[in-house]
Image 1: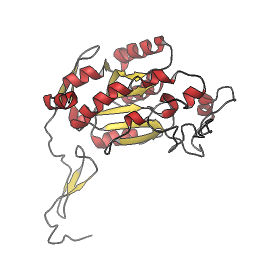
Image 2 (image 1 turned 90 degrees about the vertical axis):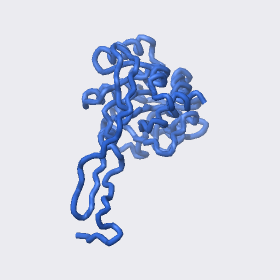
Image 3 (image 1 turned 180 degrees about the horizontal axis):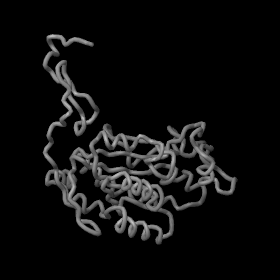
Image 4 (image 1 turned 60 degrees about the vertical axis):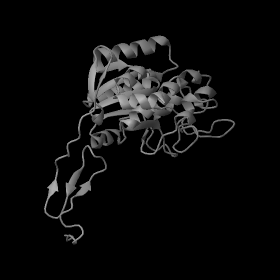
Length: 272
């Protein structure tokens, strides 16, 4: 067993990445008690009820704001879909994210980032992107620029330029509609000490909804940010999603109400 040096004797070293859950250890003791951090309380105006949350234990998850879904010449644009509607969350997220970062709320980007060999991708997921067997599907090159559909490190899978992640943000690759299947997302959230998740991204009725429902099943408090989500599906799909979230899976609010609930210093930063 390593012996302490005079410089390290009696100095407890942190064990763990995040302050909310790390231990401390020295030669005599391992301290599993997480140091107390003063709660930062925000009360969100939301439906079906207002919710009171501790920002020290809250994260925002932003799903699939990627070029393939939200940019010209991406996969959705290539198949004739309306990629422009999926850009609606960009502006509200540009306003909201600096405010959340100022309160040290973790920003987690959860995006399709498939292996080049698609070795973990079953046939039903190929069918999702190539339902008739014709056209350009997962991992195949798009015309014009040759980016591979939703392949990790390709332009197609990159987050749109307008929402480029900041240092300290966390990025998680996903391989299914839900961000919790076959990914480290739940482990990361638990290591962060997260209890409440704000959800944003595309598509509201697909990847956002099913990631939110899995989070609900895992015991997290879930809040859908309606103006920070979008979908190219028919309007009734969004209406059904919002209704079901309020009925069964959590709460619904928007970016303006989240900003309004922040401590005064965060609102002042946003105003500048």
